[in-house]
Length: 118
Image (cartoon, rainbow, N blue to C red; front, side, top):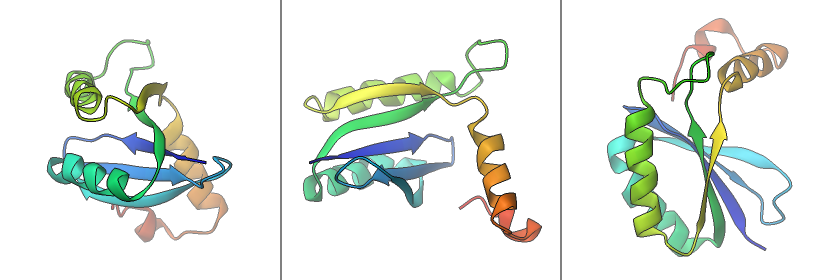
């Protein structure tokens, strides 16, 4: 089986999560400086079987492109060029930050640790 890589693209940092080989559970892998992201992905994909890369699609609550949408679109074009044999999908990421925050609260992570972006 193969893995799915999920990216939460940011102007400074990008969060990366991966599924297990059965694609049942996704777990956080790392947070990396965005300028190093393509090198990281090439290295990771050379070592692991990846069938799909999912990129968060940033939109406003009015379903309009957010401020970072243009940068994400450019990055997706780079992914398609660099990984032509891997499926690239977009996922509406509205509410994912609030869901992640609630998950941290539910798991008892202290407020100061929740502020750490990496």
